[in-house]
Image (cartoon, rainbow, N blue to C red; front, side, top):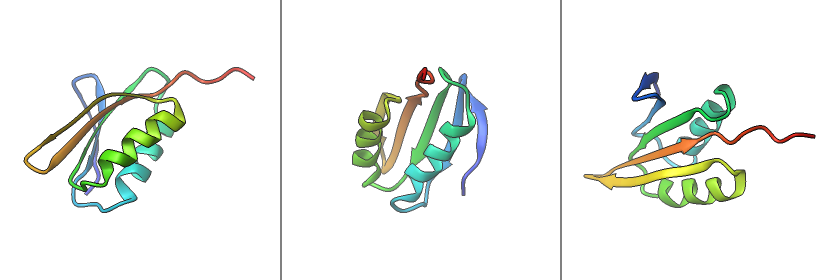
Length: 86
């Protein structure tokens, strides 16, 4: 189940139970809906999400501020990058 709520000044995305590529796709959608500089906290249970979020951060320019695992739950904290000027 995916739920969007505010928690600790970050938008919270629950992607537990979702398999690759859904945690990342849900995170990308959430990032599209928030303002630059806003943080997104994602919780997932798919071990493949570790690599997905690291690569996504490098390619997209969104900062991966935190990546942690505890008891099979993977937590990521992303900060949406500022819009690029044309």
